[in-house]
View 1 (cartoon, rainbow, N blue to C red):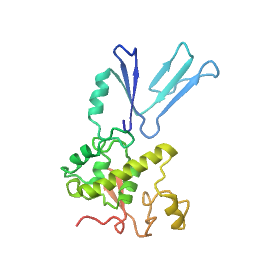
View 2 (cartoon, one colour):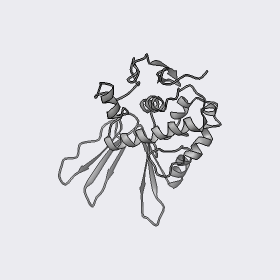
View 3 (tube, rainbow, N blue to C red):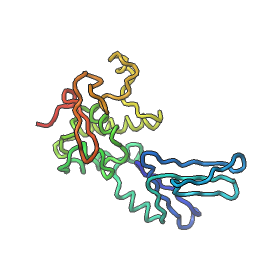
View 4 (cartoon, helix red, strand yellow):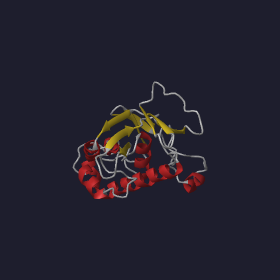
Length: 221
């Protein structure tokens, strides 16, 4: 769910052990076949080692967060998370109801996993750019039409990233039309807007750098 991985172990008819994983920026879950290769030793960053006696499979997990619990661990954590744009059961109506009453900015809400479950800082910049929405607009002032644009591009870009295995936010046809077919992102970590060539503004928002093109994303009055 979002950036959280839940793994369940145990008999189908009995109680399950649950492992909650958040990989962070550099987590890895490697799997080795001890029948065909030499399994490397664990390292100082290995948080979990699993061995399957029958198959000979061995896995080493390095991640920012690794918690072991029961099914209550899953239900409690999942209840705290928002809508995941990669899941078919994501409910945009539930999310809009939360956003519509918030005094926080849409830029902050997009990074809050209790609202939008999944996007990180690159996606925040590019989603709001493609939606034409300035990050400083308050959730309660966003309105349904702009919210729908934000949600559409959230789903579209994260689905694209999942399929391609890379954060590519610029549509190839537009990149070609702009004369830069290798353009991958519009404004993230850029001085100039990839679309209008205007100056990109950046500032701190909750200890993360936020980006906007004031020409393509009019700021709130």
